[in-house]
Amino acid sequence: MRSTTEETRVRDGAPRTGIVVAARAGLATRGVMYVLVGAIALRIAFGEDPGREADRQGALAGLAGGPLGRVLIWAVGIGLVGMTLWRLSEAVFGGAGPDGHKARKRLAGAFRAVFYAAVAASVIAFAAGQGGGKSGDEQSRDATASILEWPGGRWLVALAGLGVAVGGVVIAVSALRRKFRDKLALPSRPGWLSGAVDVLGVAGGLARGALFAAAGGCALYAALEYDPAKAKGVDDTLRAFADTPAGPWLLVAVAAGLVLFGLFSWAAAAWQRV
Image (cartoon, rainbow, N blue to C red; front, side, top):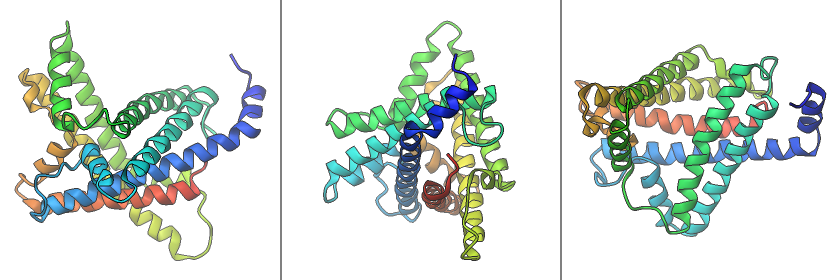
């Protein structure tokens, strides 16, 4: 194991510069993806482009259709690799802040590194022309169906769904409590900046939390019903908000919140403590 002195030297030397660059690139890329997905969901809510997927696949397809599309997708993939390396560094060396070296923080970093590694791999595969087959919703249902066939698979899907749903609630509550402030080093001027970032962080965090909670709830329901068709990807989960008594306006609120979370991610790319 590395000593605290060794970890500090690694984090404070040249490798730390690389970690900072990777973190800021990753956060900026995360912001791009949330803005694109939120914008697609808004168009769907207003009845425009209903066949478009409001998820990562749809966002990448939109980038691919624009100028320098393939280059932009490669840039997104590289940015997500940066996010993966940053989260991995938190697992190995500890994160910023007085409690950054605690076991739970390192474990959270490890889980995030695995998640972003999978996302980065899918984006790079898309950039290389190997993606774009099944939609995100189909992939979610297929994965759920496969796991349900495992011994104890029903419990695994239920626990995963419950974990994602609880994680969504935690994200929303943390946003309401403005816990994100602890991770940002905002400049004191201009005076309105802190308030603007608060709005982005709270509204964006609530929307992101609602999305996670709903997706996790669908997975839990799929396990209880033993029906993989009940599982939903991001696109189906977002569309489900329009089927509530609030109608498309709830989808509008969540979609707008995702756009705001994307903008918050760009603010974090500038001022996140790394």
